[in-house]
Image (cartoon, rainbow, N blue to C red; front, side, top):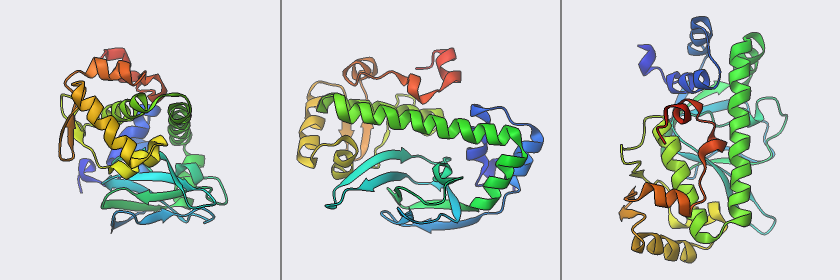
Length: 250
């Protein structure tokens, strides 16, 4: 199997962006044991209270993190795109404090947690890259708290749409116009932004009327990207896409 076709290659490129890896580091990551499996939408890979035995890496499809209140209400607290690890958050914790669930049908490569722990401890570059990746995820969590807690509904949705576009584009998964196929239902958008699905539907129509988004079923594009960023109070600093910031891509 060519390195480019290896299921862990996208993750390795992501880790290398966060902290430079040597050829030996990359070879060691490619040598990690893994098992491929397909999961349907809504399938859990991690449940709150579990002791995770594996760390899934998204090969295709999308996933999300979520927590459930005592009365059963769900709050989506993060999204994952292809090439990202689903459980670095629990790498050195005994018990998971949240759930990880498939957003769409997806293929994942399950790597034993002990294998990731060992390579993180034995190879400093890999350990640093994993740590930086986890810190970036924490930065995104902080921005999501701000988004739900302090922005109005129009800004919340615009911000989420901007974030998804940049994260996909950073991994070569968005179109040149920043557009993409939105994998979330209105109910899921509501759970990610602290709104109701009815309110989400209303705000999406407002954004369309204002010429900020164009929807064709699940496909979404942005005729006025700069204005959408302004409406969403969007500054990509929290994503720590240093190479793109320096090049002025966004």
